[in-house]
Length: 251
Image: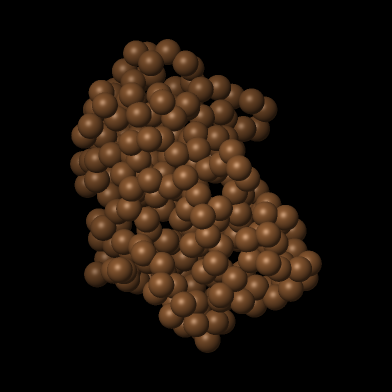
């Protein structure tokens, strides 16, 4: 099966919110590319912030005006491009849309696939959210959680983990402790973990599959079976080397 066909299980009209760490922006861009290639009207944005250079190729609309923003995106879609809308530029970041605006967009354009980056992770491999994140629109049909499997067997340090104090609390860990499969599953399933405030179907995208300890990954997948999910995607690489290896239908 060609890699692009793996996206078929995720793509479709509605709001898709992407959370976690270790490849969110890549998931957003690859899913959006799939949508355009397969003639699905597709828009990207964020409900938090993204890097301005990351979004530059999409030539976004910047502003708060709903009619102007939606018209700009509609024109991009009619030109068979990815539509993109952010509220403003702030230095090297772009500020995203309010969740209520995204919900309003979905009501106005139910045939659009709206792909959102819904929290930040500062390029770390795993994270736990603070109480105010992720920012998930009410009408989200699917929440995609991203984790990098290279965290398995790594020590709990600021180099690997974003929101490290929150991670300690969730997994009952200590500084420098080695991240075990049970820790990663706990981070995924905990009510204050990866899927905090999530809506719709839950999907896990596991990046770094080809660069991770095979025994630890197998243990992780076995323990993960206790978590209700729609799909688990195993992905080789990270960022530029991102390639879907396998899609596993889940419970």
